[in-house]
Length: 328
Image (cartoon, rainbow, N blue to C red; front, side):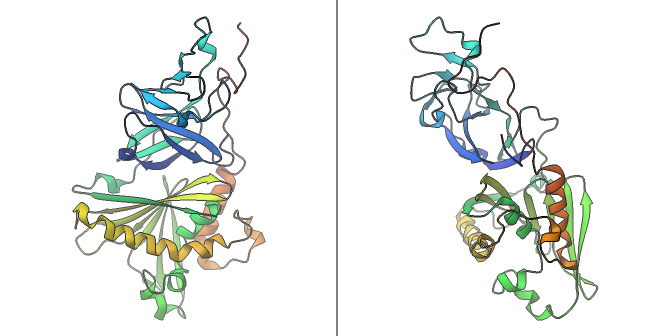
């Protein structure tokens, strides 16, 4: 499960989008997941596959924190425990559970762990501790492998070409000069800065393992950040969650303006990134690279060392769809 993206915490959306009494389906790294609020109102996540006949639980209903399969009415709580198998009062329900996954709410965000036994909790950026923070969000789908999307988010030299009329306009007149890009390892990932002809450029970005970029574009005396989570849906599709965080112009009436800006910038990247071949980032030696590619090459090393080939194995007690373990 979760091939090459296993055993990590990932942002998957906004906590406020998980409504009581409503299933919320998603795809993460090739797996169907259904989120819902349990009887205590906490976020819960199950593999979106009934252990009975494999149908999508997200097509069912949620009643008092329990999700009901739309096919035969089997019911499961947030831990995956079977709470009822209609017409089978003698069923050994302890052997008929769904597969649960760790889910959390932190910083107003909904998180999923792509495995079963996390050793830590989701790591929030310090930005979320800022007072008076306004947060707006949106998501877009790209037909691209998430690693290509992620390295694009860490790449500075493309700005004056792809974003020549937006965030890269200030670099157009500097392209004949020398750019140095600095990758500084941090416990959460890295901080990336740059200088042109040895003159530091304003702004910075941070890479937060495994799949988040945070861009620092603070105006004088203000906080303004753009965060992007590159969530793999499958081998060919990435869902980008675009978050804008600011401590000025906080009225929700202004959210559409910031969403329009984010979508415009994302649209500038999309066609170009979707054209990349091969779809998944290759070993460094298979593509030509230069000095200013340091951040993307660092990300590729991290991907190959920590994620590529990873997989999560469900606990032994979880039954496969259509199969019931024999009683001991």
